[in-house]
Image (cartoon, rainbow, N blue to C red; front, top):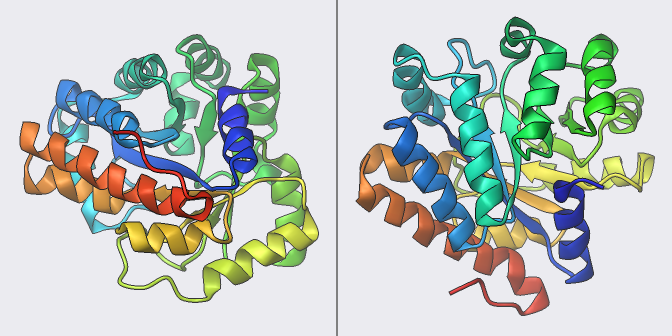
Amino acid sequence: MSALSDVLAKARTDDRAALIGYLPVGYPDVDTSITAMVALVEGGCDVVEVGIPYSDPVMDGPTIQAATEPAVQAGVGIADALQAVRAVTSAGAAAVTMGYWNQVERYGVERFATDLAAAGGSGAVTPDLIPDEAAAWIAATDAAGLDRIFLVAPSSTDARIVSTTQASRGFVYASAVMGVTGARASVGDAAATLVDRVRRLNPDVPVCVGLGVSTGEQAAEVAAFADGVIVGSALVRCLLDSPDEHGVTAVRTLSRQLADGVRARAGRAAPA
């Protein structure tokens, strides 16, 4: 069992969803981004997705791209992400990376898995890698004891959901809107429908939802049907608006509000 699996199991025991916060390493600089990730943990995030900046982020919307583009230009990469993973795990949360497959291939698949495990990471989200093409990654994660997190979407067929969830470990990422990431004004019905489909086809895998959640109220709504609530763009916006210690404070504050939301079902307060 990875730290990620432990966190999800503990949240389930507490009758609540886990809170998963995303920030890219390197914006506005490496040190500030890592401080902000620690602030996520202090605010109540159970898991931190450490974003690895990439020049062609096909899943990321304009908010995340605005933060990752200068990081790419500054040469931020996997070594910096591993530094962030160490800081997150030292702060007491589970850490996974979020990056694109070309980055892993260029770094070296086995090397990446080994180095990520050595840094204390639980696994990786690979949004542009499908299980059919993931033999090398599956072998490397098996050898390193890492979780591998694949994605499903509303357009996924039942057969695709079955194959993806069977290949996933830790959780399956339900991307509950079509298109790129970004904060949204309402939750809608698509997310709950997708989670229901996944659970019907594979009741054993935790399902965590990325939907554009930006408020504690939305987090509570998604937490009512998902095993985990993934928040990215709203947290990144805090740093874009104030790329300094004030932005870090805003990240911590929003994390607390989101944590209150996911804990509402169990009547638990977020950490002070």
